[in-house]
Length: 113
Length: 113
Image (cartoon, rainbow over all chains, first blue to last red; front, side, top):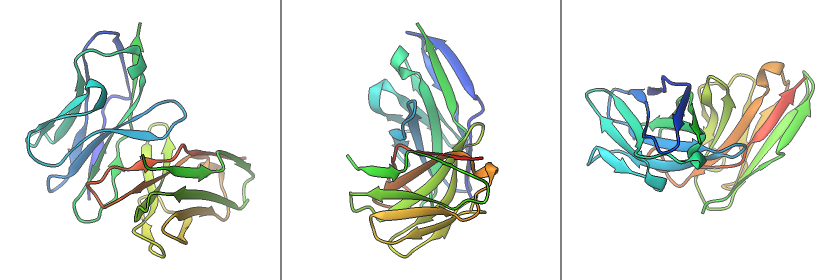
């Protein structure tokens, strides 16, 4: 079975600052890894995903994430945040054998003007 | 863009009541999922399906039944609703297992009084 932990329930940053949201996973094999974003009263939307290859994967709106097998992590980054990035961000993990994705508890990002 | 439509958007019922949440996707996806979202827990998997007539048990199935009548339609049934089932429910679909992105509906907010 797989699981995912997002240790930070809330993160606040100033507009223009850099951002890192943390995600740690637990799995006996390298899983598929995803980051989703949820804007108020909406469903989740995919930012990026990773399974193999270059450990740094690019996503939409300037987001990227870095996979680390040694640390079992898949942290999300952005070089310069905008107020519109304020949302809840979810890390998700699934395995290759027809396995449904499991989500972390989410990190609520607030970008101060 | 895949379309996933949930109904109703909001539902209020009383303890012991009977509730059906509906989900329809119009992109010929085989895989459909029901999640509930609660503060501090993120999204938790209730039930999922690989196709019409198929049902798989998720991580928090107690008190819920699901039925996949067609490729398009996936229903979540609460036959004796309890206040602990007050939550935001999301339906999602995907074209394949594990490594494919999920497309989410806008959610159904259920209150059990």
